[in-house]
Figure (spheres, rainbow, N blue to C red):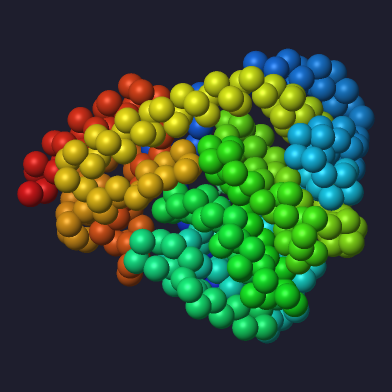
Length: 351
Ligand SMILES: *Cc1c(COP(=O)(O)O)cnc(C)c1O
């Protein structure tokens, strides 16, 4: 034990949303995409399989070219990583020394805190307003890193570009990381702001919009001077051949993305109305999930348990400011009908 760093011994590991044992479970707890990925992905992976005897391209150049083209940046301004998780880890490994501070927002994505802990970095939270908006007073102090998911998780809130600018300008000596894991559903991105700000980085993932959570591919966007350094630190063969080929095919099939996100958004709006009709407070979502508030912790807990008995998994954060809230991922229309039906019954039982 003495050989294990104390920051590692002290930390608690990240607990993800949890997988389902029963294949009939309607799994609406991890914001995965319920639609299969583009058929072009399977085709590309199939042909890449014939070359598995060869090491992959360490630079993921072909994938990065496709991403650069799509997002209007140069190849040097984008890097490809093993899920966006690897990209998020690189910020800590490249920007922080033990004892440094990183800042996030509360409520927010808790994985940033786990990454901070394992790198012996202090992690401080700034509270969002009661409506989950960016507060007027931002105090990033001397943080090396600031993380903001936009659209936000777990609330689904879309922060306007002006908010992002205000955040970046509030911390000229630190790097602001905008985590756009759900931006395929909002259509809004701050990648073009890289031209205005050297201290901005943007992270994207193929896990949500592109329905490729199982493939593990993410993208990081920042100025060339930053990514040059990151490239030295990442795993040398961080993306295998199948991941590179699959992700590139996914990026190039824009029609699939357009159709699938349109379906998800239509189901989201319909479901949000259904939840509101049952008397819950629903927060506006620009993502593929809905965050809503019940009348209290006890009701939220009961609804969560009641849905689970009906084999429907949602997420309940047993956490100070949001312990009365539930989050449901947007699945197919059939999933959402089953969910709304289960929610109505659960509410009757809980009342
Ligand atoms: C899902 C999610 C990610 C994780 O993306 P991976 O690419 O699967 O690692 C990152 N950030 C937020 C806010 C997410 O919700």
